[in-house]
Length: 236
Image (cartoon, rainbow, N blue to C red; front, top):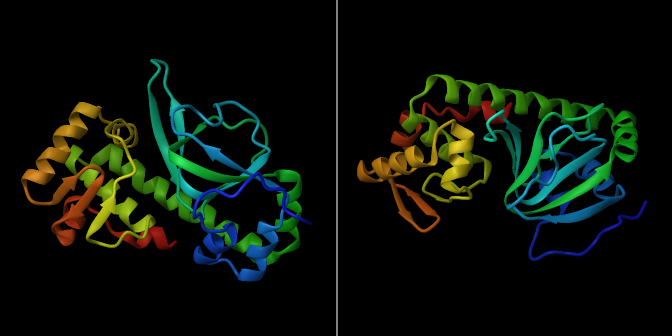
């Protein structure tokens, strides 16, 4: 069935390429890429999907980063998960009690559960792929829980930067930081003022060097140690 696309944006990699790079067989990636869908450009300044809304759609990130967030009673929020290119948000029964917002300008493929679910049911390899994806997301969630619950403020930020570098395939020497200080605070359970202090301390102690959004890791091994970061959970 032919894809229903809105328009091509910039030099974005195809969904097929991002899924294949995530480990999906090219033949199956072709099936998902051909599923009826829209391509939406999502701006980061406001929620893309509100908490409590029905979620009978599947999303795949083609470029940028999406965040799942949960609001609290005081109007604040906690970012509870991130989705990078090639990663997705699967359909669910009933409303989702989290919102979705772009961290940076993102291009997202959106399809309907009525088209996605039969594909998965018909192909055991797709079932296995998405089961592994769910397991990996669960492992990331456990790591984030430990990060916010047990690590100190410096370790929380160091761990987030290390994880982001790995998930963005940036290597161990440099990262184009996609986050504002408020977003880092919303992920690590701190205030933006405290995040600013932590980043300044990390720079003063020779862990990183900053120039605009560019972060250079001056000692990757020490970053791993400070953040208690062991990347094996990202390979689940």
